Length: 169
Image (cartoon, rainbow, N blue to C red):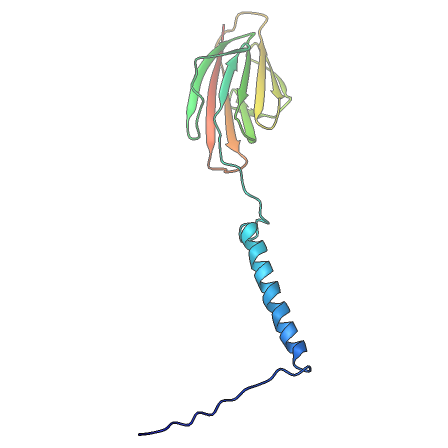
């Protein structure tokens, strides 16, 4: 029968080694707490923990203060509608958007008061998501006046919806 002799090394921690043990313990505790903090805020990426709200770009339409029977306009969609001169058109996208307004093919800015083809048109920025058009015609219009409103989401620039309006007598 063979006998195997084992050499066992026992190391005792002396008071001088306790400082390195404490440093290692602090290092492990710091690593664990940092990993917990990063997992709580979404990983510590360049977004700084900011979570973008879900896109809900759906344009609601109100003509003359009354909601119409129009379905909300979803991203990529469009709506063609006609309003009478003298009516007000309100559009609300449901989220912050950039509105581009074209009257007769020419771009106008918010707050613009335009006289075009016999119609006074006021554009009003109601909020970050809503815009209004006030219209007035003193006389019968010689032709319909085309207006295009394009809403582009500030969260996702690929979400675009269009409203084509004809102002008629």
